[in-house]
Image (cartoon, rainbow, N blue to C red; front, top):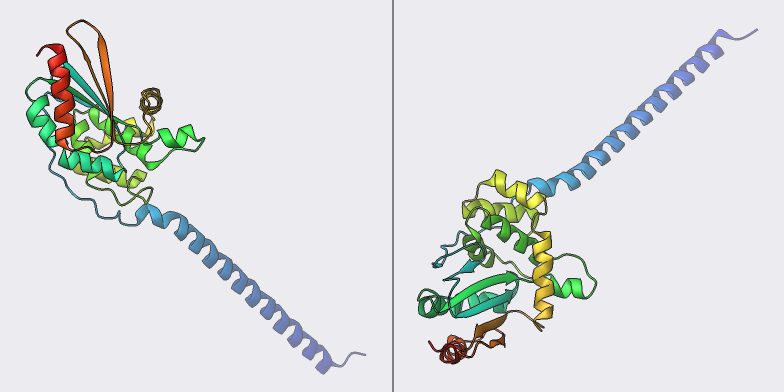
Length: 256
């Protein structure tokens, strides 16, 4: 015959064991929940983290601006710049030389200037993936749909943090576009659709075809007085006097 006291003790032990197991289960569930919340935080936080400071930039004047071109399309001399929005020497050209080119030759109808961003050409040529430069290039073309290519061009150069250092992440490009004064619905639709991927790829291929081995590089072209097409590759962020000499030589050959 069972002793009632023994039965009572067993009941108490079973109840204690049940409560302990229940407590352990609750602790386990709580720890898993905290872990899940922490992982979710790590995933979601970058989307809410403040974007590193984006500067407002006053754009330079661009006569007869049309998408990524400026100047008179019928100008006797054409210059195509193959550049990269993350390239410090490209930024140097933009700040130190381009304004004098605009004032002396582009605004006066002597030079028609085209900007092509080829920051992807090195990566694609070596079998690599896309870069922030490529994303920046596509964002500038999207801004061109709203007649603000050059404004976006200047804002991009004014907000470089370093090469592939997060200058042109999707969120930062969006902030730069907003500060440029773009219609964000139109911009986001253009950018997310990859509308200008083919154009970006073409810019890279054309740079290689032109013999470009680094940025910035410039292809100066014209048709001389005898009707013969001429071209000259100018490499590097050369001073204004270098461009002046080449342009004056071309103008003389054209008969202007």
